[in-house]
View 1 (tube, rainbow, N blue to C red):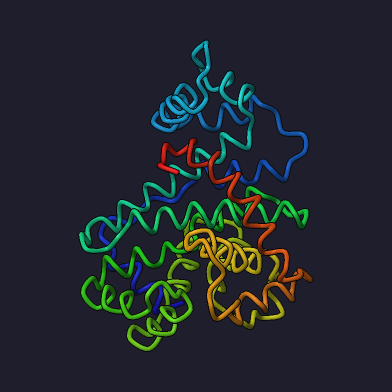
View 2: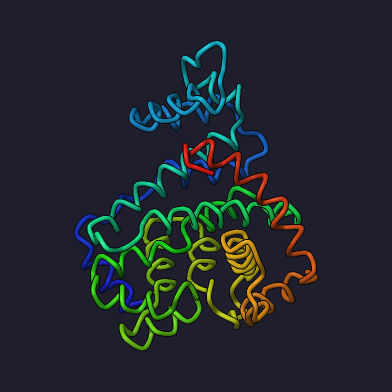
Length: 283
């Protein structure tokens, strides 16, 4: 982690800790939460309130009567949808870090992140895990790529070209060249932000076949499977070489049949239309 910290320290415009998103995530664990608590928390951030209300009043929802305040927004569309918007704003703000490297395709990374988030949400729902936590892990799992692209633009772009979309091959190349991977940098950043340990660990181990016994591997395994689902959705096919060892290990840990991958893809496709509507992205 010392190496990861040293790279994070070199980023000039590091995104601020997503305090509101972290507190909202905690609220999912409280069955007695009240709408007023959610509204009060979001309302502490005027810019966040503005963005959520703007989205609620956008074309995706097409409400005949405009949403006037956060209480109405939460009661009309639900806590989960509002949370999805909030964590999406966190992810979008983080993408701005990578835009300092003009040759790095932040748009492609953002689309992959959103697709992975929806896929993670889908797998989590099937397993009875918390969808909000899985969605967050999927959305933020590749943040380390943005930081490396900002710090070492020329060398990192060369590594990404050689890896040709293979995240596991890229992680191995990063370790060889930089002595650290985007997974370890991203995991450390989430830890420093104060996000739950299961989230930072899911990012840290999302390219690892073996996960330490002391770590709850459930969420990390979900993110690994979500990565495979996202790649399948992005390429419209299962890779010719079949599922990689990381995905197989994740499926085994969660006692899931590899044959369920098409089912996850189908459910995620539906969810992706919904989330892209929220984020005003082209489908």
